[in-house]
Image (cartoon, rainbow, N blue to C red; front, side, top):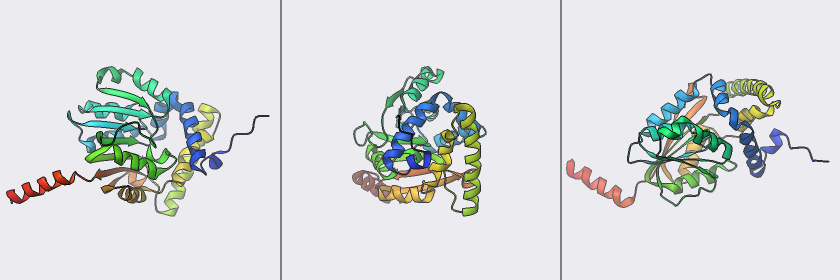
Length: 261
């Protein structure tokens, strides 16, 4: 007899359980991923991503890495600003869909790579910019993923991350998570005959430390600064973390400032 698959909460109780569950989940939902992000955000998802891309201020000289890129929305948007951009995702089917989009032909300076945010397949100090939409909340070990992002960023580089927030107010948090549970269960049942499919979102938020705690963790992993922009009244957030500039370059900049003053 085949052993029963662990339930959602049991699967998320350990980093290894979460790793296995998330890989299976995103393989399951890949073909409906774009539809679901529109449905669950009431069409606001693309507006939030455009806001992240505007904050990034990418240009023709930027080398960018989009993590947990899914079907490539942020990857293509950053490339549209002129940046040379790599999208990385752990789900091969997501990358197949991204490569087949018309945007892939419009942006030949993009590439897609299958890989794990916890062990990035890139040398240190490779990128000026790292972006991610809904990526940090899904990793099995958040500190490890942030440390890897810090490693691959060049001195002075930036991390911009869009994700759900975990509201500090207990009453608001309960209402928010209850809503996501009801809606996620209904959508999962209709599309996949499994209510746990999108009930994963509120369950992952329950275990997510929240925007302020993510910034504190980023600073502990070596980022010189981190702040976050509340979105949707604080139910979502965009993090902006900056790696410390190269010491020699910082000294040159300080000297130039003194000379101009």
